[in-house]
Length: 95
Image (cartoon, rainbow, N blue to C red; front, side):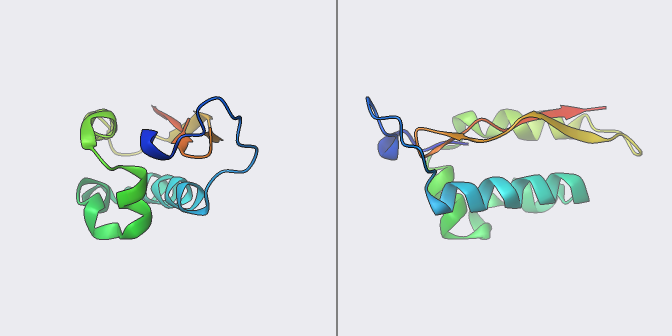
């Protein structure tokens, strides 16, 4: 999830944009809850989602990964955080 238009190119933004942090937290909560339909329909999640995912090509692989999730498998996040103010580094591991 990222927005390259708002990325702090050449400036290492020490504080992520609020919307980037909120959407990463929301996505993590939905993944842990198994709320896949809400992640599929991310546009309905509002402004934070639309700013975090202005184009879907880097978001869609997440949907392919969660489609492989089997019941009782755990979701973990080996990498988290936001770089450059707007690029979520959230990595999702299924199983």
